[in-house]
Amino acid sequence: MSKPVGLLTLQGDYEKHRQTFAALGRETCGVRRPDELDRVSCLVIPGGESTTLSRLIDRIGLREPLRRFAADHPVMGTCAGLIMLAGALEGEEESDFGVKPLGLLDCTVLRNGYGRQIDSFTAPVAAGGLGAAEPPFAAVFIRAPRITAVGPGAEVVARHGEEPVAVRQGRLLGLTFHPELTDDLRIHRAFLDLAGSV
Ligand code: GLN
Image (tube, rainbow, N blue to C red; front, top):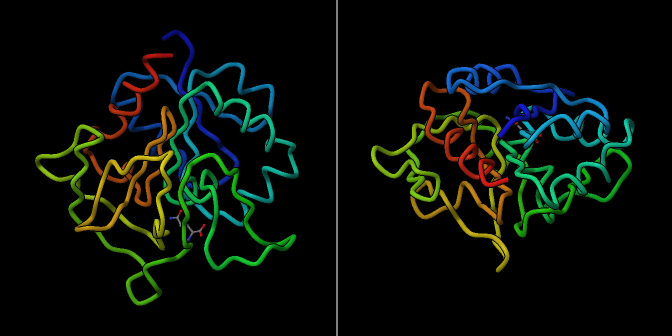
């Protein structure tokens, strides 16, 4: 694969993803404009704040280019990035100020689904579908969304207890947690493996 890994650098913690890919020996390239998607082989939509991400995506005119890119390239969304990839959001008002997901992953997501009392926590996640079954992945959840329904198009690839915390649909991957906040490279490596078939 010759092109670098793309990072949507509009907002959020993309820098940690850059460091993780660097640890895997992979170059990254920031994406802020539609034409920059031509330079990358795959894309990560990082965690951050989905209301801001959604608004910036529309202001910059990235919504359709991102949807087109995702039709034939791997895309990984983490936390707010998963919210953006989701097919539907639960309990969100349709409004100009709300989050409009890209509608790419066949799942429904509830923003801030773990409630305020446990805004952030780390928990072992069985991520066999991402090459991280044993030992479990120490997943960092920060005001994380909850996956409340998974449609037939998507497959659960990681669970916290019984609960799905990552889904995959072809070469699209959505995680409720932040794999870039640990030294464990297994999930980024699994994403690159997906991307390797491009
Ligand atoms: N709660 C944030 C949102 O709704 C997501 C938090 C995160 O990305 N860590 O966008």
